[in-house]
Image (cartoon, rainbow, N blue to C red; front, side):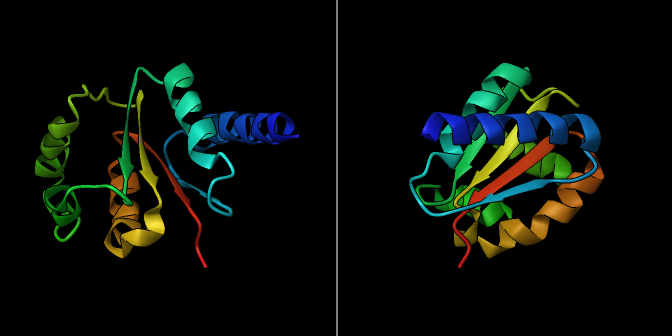
Length: 127
C-alpha cells in the first residue's frame, strides 16, 4: 500500500511541476514518518538537475537565520553553497522539510517563488 501511495504522490508531483512551471510552491502535509520526504527526494533526484533538502528538524542556526531577512535573494542563494550543490536556474528544486518548525521559511516561500529561479516543495506535519 505504501508503494501505491508514493506512486500517487509522485504522479501528483510530476503534474505540479508541469502545470506550475515554477509559479507555485507545493506543500505536502501528512503525519510524520509516512515517507513524504522520501518520495519528494526521489522526485528531486529524477526530475531536476540538482536539489537541496533543508531539513528544519536538523538545520543549522546559520541556515535558519537566512530566513530572517530574505530581501537579498542573491545572498540567500549564495548561502546555499553550504550544501555544496550547484543550483541551476529553472532546473533545481529546493525542499523545505518539516517546514512547520520554521515559520519564517513558510513566510519566505512567497518571495522565493516570485523570484522564479527554482522550484520549491514544502513538506510538513502541520497541526
